[in-house]
Amino acid sequence: MPRLVRGSVVVHRRRCGKPTCRCADGERLHEAPVLSYSERGRTRFLMLPAADVAAVRAAVERYRTRKGRLEAEGDAGLAALVAALAGRRARPR
Image 1: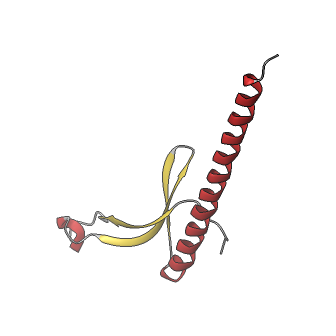
Image 2: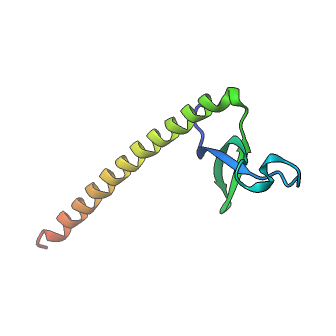
């Protein structure tokens, strides 16, 4: 299983299209765990076997944690750059 996965684990609810199925009334839909992710601007779904759901959820959470840390480091770097450039402009020539 991959260490990091970008996306979200969600429950996909749908109708199968068979007129005699329990889902035809729209109330008791089929449910399946899926990984929802974006690829080239389109939302994609990847069906997940029940045995893999917990591992994929953990990989998604690790991705989000790392992404949050990276964004925080990037924000700190940007603030430092802005302060350094502002300090240079404030000095008389």
